Length: 122
Image (cartoon, rainbow, N blue to C red; front, side):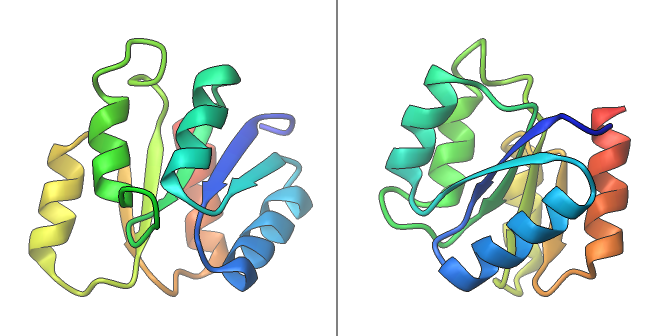
């Protein structure tokens, strides 16, 4: 519901801005990071309720970040929604096996993404 904190981890500033606006309009508190290192530091200091994660990130990549999160007890329960422009179904399978709660190909209609977020946040 409203008030949940969502961390957007996306290296494309325009995509970050769009996601931020969509989340705020839906009543969520949106935070953002442009690379894996900044994101990891932020989530360890102040874990969000949900993460939207791009795979093509500087600073280690989104998949590595997801896998690293799964080894840290305070981060592993956080639902992660992966948004990726990578077309391979192998990528989707690997992401889901690495602990993601959902996977969507870019571009994803805002209503589809928001519906999944509402579902994951209960």
